[in-house]
Length: 355
Image 1 (spheres, rainbow, N blue to C red):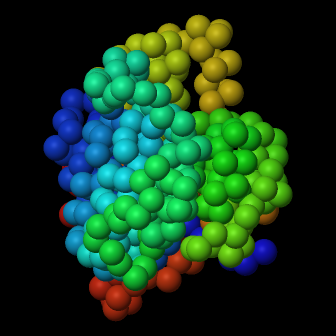
Image 2 (cartoon, rainbow, N blue to C red):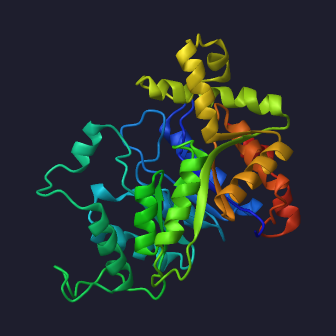
């Protein structure tokens, strides 16, 4: 297997006591850092009515991030397609591709990205239920000007017409999404940060490969896995930093509205019930936590088990400096090649780390 490529999924987490403006500003700084350090791609997510996550409109954030970076691929992880018209999504991402050719990823998913109330608001006025698989086929047709003659909108063009196509990824944590991605000829990202069962993920990726049919933009199957990662100088430091994510996930499972990522102090003083402690241990299957050497070993083993050469990392910490340092240490552990002049990119100033 080739050397593992590292990418980042950033959900614009809001720290306790912070706000959405600061969270998105931090996402921009992380994207700039990832570009300098040599990460492969940088994705942003879509969540609605979420007090602990600021990213709700990845298309707009992608446009901004692409202008703030030089070489890194930028994309959505992902656009929740059932909420929208496939035609509108195609036009949006064609425009992004026109502005930043060869750098745009269109990652799509079918999860609601929020609670039922936000889904109803997003879909208000819709007169019919949309079929996700048909939406995917429509999206493919619009992106490649290949709607069949029998299509209900045959001859329709998604503007602007461009000579390149954004990379199409389908995101999921189940066999359904894997099979759909294979049938569509799209790339597939398994979300182990959502479904911590490695066996489920390995089977999903295998199913994707079995079902894969070449498409206008992808001749061979291309898969990757996304996982929570927290890297620090020592295993003990990483475990302490990860405790805030442990508590955040427990609160989410309990239906508690989170007003930001809990602090480490809150996490370490929280009175976990036996059930909640078991849940923390189960959730650790969705994470890779440790020192640089340990994290590299774990991620390489993860990639080998899945048979992929790319891992996407999602990092949520209470302190922004810990998030920045995790990405720095990970880049060093994997000996990523910095972009630009080595003197400029080898050093990350304190400005990148401060709140």
